[in-house]
Length: 389
Image 1 (cartoon, rainbow, N blue to C red):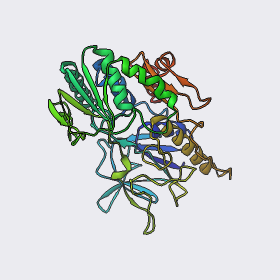
Image 2: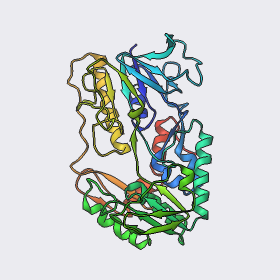
Image 3: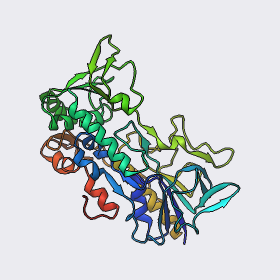
Image 4: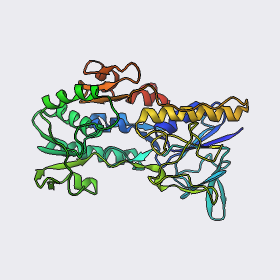
């Protein structure tokens, strides 16, 4: 039976793992024993009752756990036919036939590899903690600090900042919420203006103070610094005294920490540390190595649902290669002519755009589609749990 190794148990990783487990031995390598649903983190850092919905155990990911495994470890290097781990897994039970130890290195061989390392982001919106307890304590600390703060600054004007502002306003009507963005508009990027046309009145009605075309002169380096009272100096020469300042910018591809040893002429990452992939989601120059999600060049627009789609294309193509049926490989293409997006502003408001039909949704549909549970229920089901807590 062929072996497929998947690096990362994020959105792309778990989508591919569940799609491939019936045709091969699938080994997922992930440092954490859980999947962190970071789409819901904007709510969890404000409403502590939502935290447990964002921490999804991986113990039921596979229907055949004797065959397929989640290895709690971190990959240090990628070779043509194996991955080398930074150190031994947290537990080696049931892994004796999977782990290879020689020359002072621990490795796992593969027939096919999918790199799905996702991206890192400023806490509290993504988690790199090894235990669910640490994640919970971290988010509880943020929620408590938001509750006791009066003046809250959000640095950045993208979806994370807007959704966090909406969650805070839904919970607390009296807090002074400010957004500082270097852009001339909120949620900048390749989105239909119809989305902003629906979103801007919601933000204005919520009394969110937005400073456009403005940067902070420095960025808090740690979460504790974000949660501290501070004077924030701005690029326009003014300053703001706030009780806390959450950093809502700064995604970094997870592939930046991976070392590749694929041959002297193999340059698989670009200057931004994104893995260069073809339309079939194969790493350039390699038939058996694939990549999907935030760490790739597949799509400039990085969101979870596109990573999921890329992973499914990669999975279909791996299946075709395993079957050796000579069918042409599928080519990934982002759905629709428009950049689909759904932005919540608390559980009851929001705006978005469907990928087809150029149809913009408002506060009737977006809460029904996303606002109710921030898509958490879907990913609990993917991980083998029919009901989330």
